[in-house]
Length: 81
Image 1: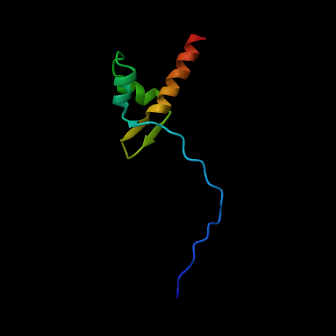
Image 2 (image 1 turned 135 degrees about the horizontal axis):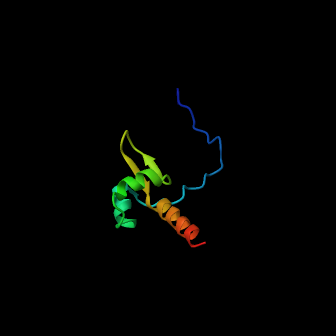
Image 3 (image 1 turned 30 degrees about the vertical axis):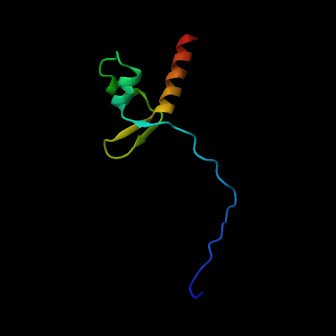
């Protein structure tokens, strides 16, 4: 075939799939789900929870539920020690 180029696989190592990170939810959903009694929970989550954060736009920030759950459990273990 004229002008065709065959694709070659340069790196034959198959990468590992990304780890499961759960749902992407807003700070308000995180605050409602995990900190229902905290006044202004959405603001607290935005200021203090820096794990699992994905910035989609200028103001749109979503959080990974699995990363947040792991972060909360590490804080609970730290408080219990």
